[in-house]
Every structure is written in structure tokens, then in C-alpha cells.
Image 1 (spheres, rainbow, N blue to C red):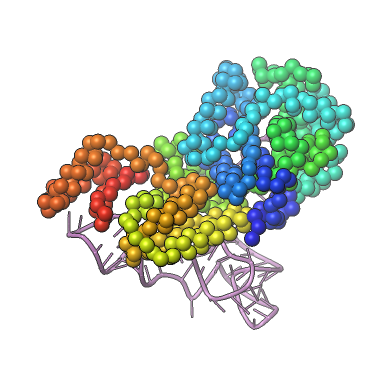
Image 2 (cartoon, rainbow, N blue to C red):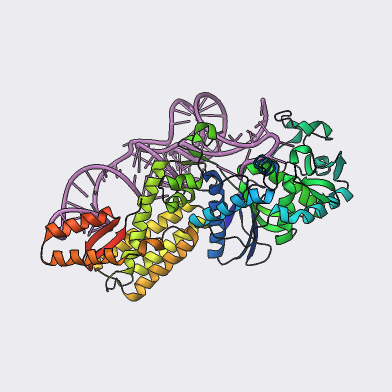
Length: 469
RNA sequence: GGCGGCUUAGCCAAGUGGUAAGGCAGAGGUCUGCAAAACCUCUAUACUCCGGUUCGAAUCCGGAAGCCGCCUCCA
């Protein structure tokens, strides 16, 4: 089967064909840095990470752009409320954002453009839209005239005439030609405080949508392969991006639009008023393992609404422990030979893994393939008693490949480090067991357990692992 | 009001016409000094409900209920 993605634009699964053979250029919606990102945001970033990693696994050269929205109503409000500069204000959240990406093992994109560093590109684009008569000036602001873009509403399936008007009436509404016209450039007013740019368009700041059009085209070209984001962005944000970009260039903007569903927390939509609103740090402060959080966010198909629960994270950690144990058990397996059984297991697992993910990133069959390999190889191991070096390599290389996509199935490195004191105690216990002094050996085992070290007496000797919370 | 999505075991979650993947939890067993890990066995006559199409439906069609989302700056 060929690699297939569900394209929001056509509302169906389509075979993925990049513009340039073997290369993918994609724009993935990033954070607005006005606050710490919450787990709903991270669901989107994890989905984008899975997409990126799988494309690489499939041999594509990926150029990914993730924007940092550091100029909008909320960042302006935030910095003015604190009485600090916009840059000082957003710097806090940019830094936190990258720390969180690290914790969740989200791979870095090639570019993280900041809106404030691309004012010129946005101004240039607005000028083109003005020249073409697609944009118009009203007061000190500039708006996009959507009646000039016949395809407006195509992505979201919105019919302009049917839009419920007056749902959220903006104060500036009255000065637009049509209620659905949106701002490309916002003239300065007092509420903006010190935040403004003096440009050919006047004193003010860009509208929200224009940054994504300007920055994506700067780094990826006028037409690129994939654009992603949360479902809430379909309308109006992505709809407006299409209108701006295609209005300016006259060319198709994006070939494949992909959107992730939202998540709920403990069965309810996540909202501050429900007291179920969590940043990643909130979760880590509760002692949750970051990789268990990653597993939970990763293991439900991206277009399926996900119900995030603390029980789910707990279950996820148990699953991960099994996968991590498998990795070390294979690494440490004694010598033996299955006579070809491993090769067929590995081949079947790979086929199932790829078959699942090729189908619009369906991770469930992919994880099933991983667990099938665990089960199958464990059976071989218990029946044959060992693996040949070639078999070990086969499994571990396949595992590395799977992990390059999933990013959770290898034991975290910090869990493989041990200090001398612990090492000494483990040796003392081994000696005690040799003397059949089980009272002493159990005492040491309990003591180590209290320190978070779990011991296992196996055929090839005593093994230890770090207890994960 | 308009548009869209979801409902599968205690929990999570695949499966979109041929008789229910996978994970977690639970019960019993093998192994072990005891454990742990691993393995074995068991755990949905059944997929929200009611109709219909079909030789055959969790899967298609119609209806109902519940939950969720978008409808101008929220992933």
C-alpha cells in the first residue's frame, strides 16, 4: 500500500505525492507564546512529530517549519499588563516551549521563525494584496476583501452566506466592508502600548493570519506539500492563509492539509473552569513520566478525539516498562539460534508497522506490530534460550527503526546509569545469595527497592533496573 | 440556527461487508529460595439503541439518544 494521508481540503484519504520526489516541505502550526503550552497543544506537536518522523523513516528528506507566534492580541496584552517589553515577555514562553519539546522527545524542526522577525515579509505581502485590489485600507488598518477570493470557504466547508453573523461581534466590525473580512494589518491604538512597527503600511502590527502565509512561503516556497494544525485552525485561520497566499501568488498554496482532533481530560473538554487544564509542567510536577505522557498523546490516532486520563498515563507507563524490559532482555540475551524464526517475526512486524502508518498514520496497528514482536521474540527466547548475534542485531535494528518513529520504546538513558554505592550493594546481595543467606539478600533487595532499584535474578545473573513512577 | 465528528470488554484502542488486532488491569498456572521478568490458560455469542438492505453488518442506509468540535485570532 502507498503512503496515504487524509486531506482536509478534499475530505478523503489521498496517496501522498510530494512536489519534489523524495522531499517533503511542511509547515506545522506552532505555539502562540503568551503562556505555557498545555497538553492539548502538545497533542498537536506530537502529531506533527509523528508525521515528521515517519516521513523520515520512509526515506523522505523533510524540511519542517514551525512558527512561533510572538505578536498577537494576547502577547500584547500580556506584556503590557506586566509592564515589560514584548520580547522579554515572549522569551519566557519560548524557552519553556523548547524545554517541553525536549522532555517529550519531539524532534526539532529545521526552522522556527518568529513573527516579530518577519514583519518585512508580511508587509511586502500585504502590499501585493493592496496592489491587486484584494486588500483595502479602512482607517489605519488593512483588511482582506474575501469577496475577491471565490474559493473562500472551500477548506472548511463554510458557506459565507450561511455563517451565523454576530456570534462574536468585534468592536472594529463596523468599519469593514463585509463582516467576514479579516485584518491583514492593524493600525496602532492605545491598547497596544509600546508594541508597534513603523512600516510602509503605517504604524501598527500585522494581523494574525498573515505571518503563517509570509513565513511558510519564505522557507518553503509558494507551493509546498503539507500544512498541519489543530482542527480549530481550519476556520478561520487556515482558510484565511489560503486566501492571502493564493491571492498574492495566484498559485496553489498547499497540497495536503492535515488537522488533529482535540483532546478531553477525564471525559470533559479541557477548560480552566473545569479545573482540568494542564501544562506539561503541571503533569511532570505530579510525578508523571514525560514518556508516558508522550505515549498517551501518541497512541490514539491523530484525527480521533483523545480522552486524557491519569489512569491512562499509569497504564501507559506499564506498557512502556514492558517495551523497555524487552529491549534490555534482547540486548542481554545469551547465545542461541532460533533457526530463522526471528527473521520471519521481524519481517512480519515491519510489514505491519509500515502498513499501519502508511494508512494515514494509523498508530494502533503499528504499536500492535511492536507488541507482536515482543511476544514472538520472548517466546523464541524462552524456548530456545538465546539468540545468535545476527538475530540480536536484526531485532535491535528493527527496534531502533521503530523507535525513530515512535520515540518511546527504548529505555530512557538516565535509567541505565547507576552509582557505585548501589553497585556495591548489588554485589553484596549476590554474595549473600551464594551463601544462601536469603534473609540478608532480601534485606538488601528491599533496601534497594526503597532507593528505586528493582532487582531480578535471571538465568544469566542478577539484573537491575530503575523503578519508574 | 448552519456544518462536522464520535459511541467497540473494567479502562485505553484497532477493525469500514465474511463472523471481534494490540495494550493496561484482573484470575489461575509454569519458572524462582522467595520475588521480578518471561511464558501458558481464562476474561466482548458481540460492537449505544431501534428499524432496514444483504446469503451475511461493528462495518452500508434511515431514525433515536448521548458526548464532542467549528461558526472571526482557541491545538
